Image 1 (cartoon, helix red, strand yellow):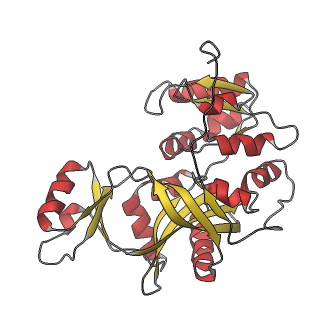
Image 2: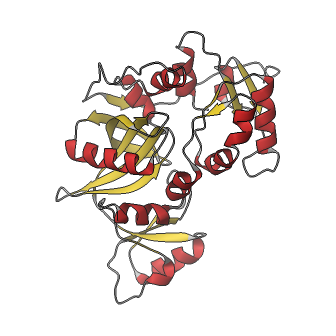
Length: 306
C-alpha cells in the first residue's frame, strides 16, 4: 500500500490500517498499525493468505492499489464478503476492459471517446503505417517496456522483444492524469485533473492541478459507462492542435493521486465515508494550480524490527 494512502487513512478517526506487501522491507510497514508480508500476486498462495489476514484482523475494507491483483480479488469478492470484508473493486468485466489495453481501445472507440489508433501486430503492414509509433505491453502498469518505434525495422524488433504487445499512434502533446471517485454503485462523483510535468517509471514526480472542462466531460462519460467503483485513474494527451485523446483507464487509485489529495480532492477519506454510509465531502475546497515536486525521503529502522 502506498505511504500516502496509509497516511490519509490514518488521519481518519477510528481507522486502523493493516498493510500487506510482497516486499518484507516495504516502507509502508513502518506507517501502518500492523503489517504482513504476503506472496506475490502470481502465487497460488496469495488469495488464501489475503483471506486469512482479513479474517484474522477483522478487516472491514480491503483497498487494492495494484493492477495485477485486481482480476484475482474481483473474482474472489464473494469469498471476502463471506468473512465480513468488503472490497473496493469494480466488477470483473470492467477490470478486464481496463487491464487489457486493446480492450480499453475498443471500449473507447465504441463509446465515441477520442483515443490514439491502436493495432495488434497482425493488423499492421509496412505500406499503411506512419511513424513514430508507440509499442507497449497489452497489459501492465507504469512505463516499463514502452518504446517509440521510428522505422519498420525498429517496429519489428520491438514486436518481437515485448511480450504480447500493442502498437499505438504517437501523440505529441501535454499529458494529463485524472483521479476520479465514484460511489459504491459506480456513479461518478468528481475528478481531479493533473498535468504530468515530469515522470519517473510511469509515476508523476512533478505535476500541477488544472481545470479542463473538455477532459472533465469525457472522464465522466468514461467512468459512468464502465461503472468504476471507488477510485479511478485515467490518462490522456492533449495534442499540439488541442485534440484530447485518452490512452488508459485504470479502476484503482493512481500513484500520483497524492497531488489530488493535497489539492482538496478527499478521495481516500470520502471512500471511508461511502463505506460507512455517510455523505462524501466532495470538492469543497479544491485548488487548481497546485504544483507537486516529489523527492526521496529516507526511513530508518533497526534490523530486527521488520
